[in-house]
Amino acid sequence: MTASRPLPVIGLPTLEIASAEDKPVRLGINRAYVKALEAAGAAPLLIPLLDDAELLRAIYARLDGLVFPGGEDVAPREYGEEPIPKVNTVDPLRDRVELALARWSLRDDLPTLGICRGQQLLNVASGGTLYQDLRYQGATSVDHSRRDGRPRDELVHPVRLDPGSRLAQLIDATNLDVNSSHHQAIKDVAPLFRVTGRSPDGVIEAIESTDRRFLIAVQWHPEELHLPWASRLFQSLVQAATRR
Ligand code: MN
Image 1 (spheres, rainbow, N blue to C red):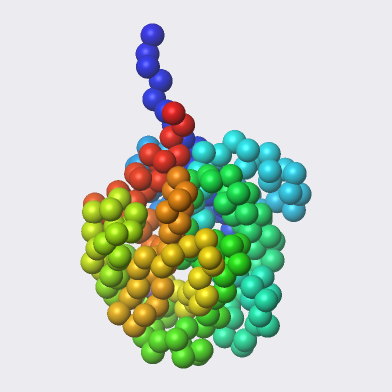
Image 2: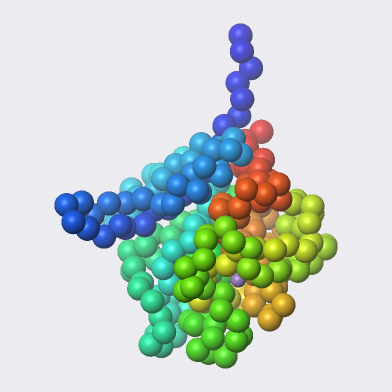
């Protein structure tokens, strides 16, 4: 008899990759998310963009946790605003799929990690709003995007975490240097969440809900960082998602 190791299944919504040259339309997600979950001992499950909510629900029912990854902008109408000219591409199907998954997981207290767009998505799913473009709307003069083409893992600005936050306790750090690849961020925080981290210019970089099993989101990209505290974040999610 061998003792079975608990292996949580963590859902990872995909995005549509447009056809190019001789390639058809594909669905996928940056491999770094898969690698980070694999390294933390979880079985990542890539979730396709499905029109049919019942089919999506059938996949959701098998999950022990969720990671909402980075990507394009959430359509401003999802938080009650008209789009300004600075809004990038939006994908209505991806919004629909991820908002459905987010609302189910929030209701069920499924361990969930939001990353970049994922943080924004969780806030919108809970009734919060976003800056459609941080600099255009005057929220900061600092460029948090990667318009200059710098590497995805380059540490470009500090984040100060609330020492009392669950995030700071889990990763055992309060002052981080992080990568940054976003032009939007949270404007009004949904009541479900509290802000636990900001960059020096005041942009919201981390949120969490402490009365949940694991509901944490960050505006940077820990999946791209091969640092001990980044690994601890994924390990903490996987631990919370491991069925007892
Ligand atoms: Mn940033």
